[in-house]
Image 1 (tube, rainbow, N blue to C red):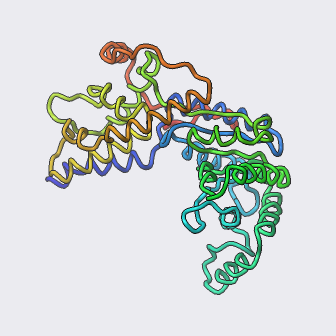
Image 2 (image 1 turned 30 degrees about the vertical axis):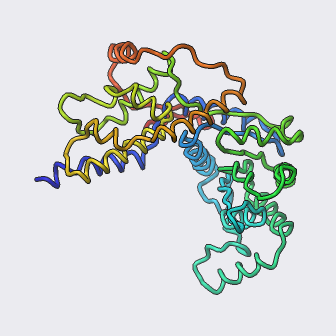
Image 3 (image 1 turned 60 degrees about the horizontal axis):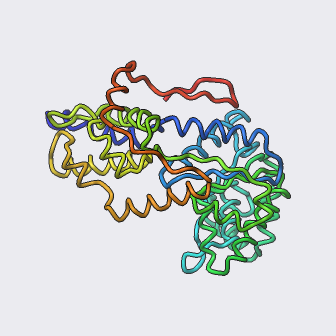
Length: 356
């Protein structure tokens, strides 16, 4: 019967990986981003920022699916929201604009430039064509493709990778300005996503400062409101988990988990998956403190992430938090409320309820 009993860790891992938790800061950021996009104009820039593992990529993917569904569901005919990852593909791990536009053409499945074609001769012909073309040629091909597909929004995920161009800050600013000009030529609003340093990077360009707005997915702070919402997150992650004797849920370790996840929801999910891996490697059938403690981030990692979050608060002009919350009191207030129900999110763009 061991294989039956032990099936719950796999089910929990699959749930964490496949289901996205629509918690409060995620819902608020989605609503704010939808509103900003609805009022944005061609060539303008909307910035989505927050800590690493904060849910930025998940939010972009969600919007891309919803806009595509609303347009008919065929990205080869119409694709209102295109999301592409900024990768460091040049020698030495540097960012390359030519490689970026080649990736965008692949994402758009351009017949003359896509390198994801099934037939090897056609794929190789496209690779050779890209190698022969310069950056300007690929940029023009992207512009035509985006206009052909009726694209309204172009999202560049992990845009902070532009910093790794290997040259001067002046070149980095020029790259950002060129992206803005490209968005205007292609008739799209540019959505740039990245961790907090992206704000400092954008402020180096006067052209972008006046044409951009910022949406944040913040971590949950150690405030009364933040603690109550973070406890909801821990309750959701606790569903389906078998705990050792004396432990009711992850909320029993709320302060400890908040300290080492810094209130970042994605970090909690990653931490739990790592703890479950240690539990299974040990041959245990219940999650215990020792598994969570062994899987937590090091003090050095936490200090580095905390510095990044502090930088984000400074760049966004946010005031430091008040005295840390009493987690036992917060848990008591949370337990006095109604039973946990699946989180729901209202999609303003399509006027329907979407449940987890």
